[in-house]
Length: 251
Ligand SMILES: C[S@@+](CC[C@H](N)C(=O)[O-])C[C@H]1O[C@@H](n2cnc3c(N)ncnc32)[C@H](O)[C@@H]1O
Image (cartoon, rainbow, N blue to C red; front, side, top):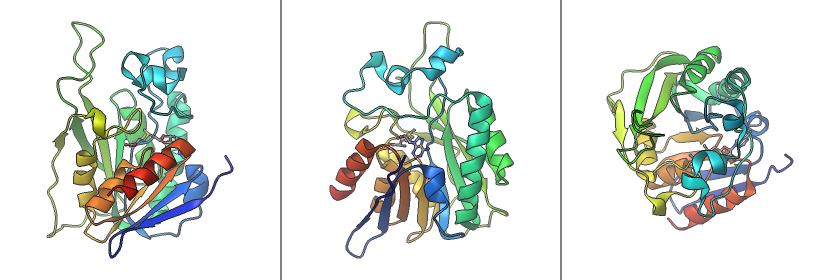
């Protein structure tokens, strides 16, 4: 992937939002150490069914209801097996740890199947794993058939770079967030609700900076801008960069 264009979107007197187009580990290596307050990201989960063919299917087949993506672009890099996923996550999590300030947070989304791999990777990258919060998507969530529990929650593995400071300005934060996904607020096959991301960026003080190396349609960046936080996002698919720029411009 050869793209490394930088687009900066800065609202007047507002937070600065930077969108980088390219491969995340490559671009993370260009960012300075100890310059952001939190890593908040939703990486490709490389999940799918219990079979290898399920995992390696196109994300449209994996994530769109009845295979209908409603025009949302697909993306690469979602077919790693558990071991290559864990190793790859530890690589970018380590690079992000360098960029986050001491005491800063990592909030990383993952599903139930890949949760053990992600908690291994976060510890392998020398973050201090602190817990797992849940995102409750509501009772509309998928269940393959009767007799199943619904796949109603995704998880937010959270960790800190060294000690977690006792804060007077914020928290304790909720251990469970309930937000359903509205079609009008979904700009990516696996897009997160903007109000959910608005809650999560609040772990960073107003004026602080969030890093999202798998920005997708830019929901973390949009949330940061709405909440007065700065953000740096990285995304590889050009179609998503265009969607992100449109969303930021519309605020
Ligand atoms: C789960 S999606 C993020 C969706 C986002 N939370 C949203 O609300 O739109 C993960 C994104 O990471 C991007 N991606 C995957 N591997 C990447 C890589 N190595 N470098 C940069 N981006 C990558 C994919 O193109 C995809 O858009």
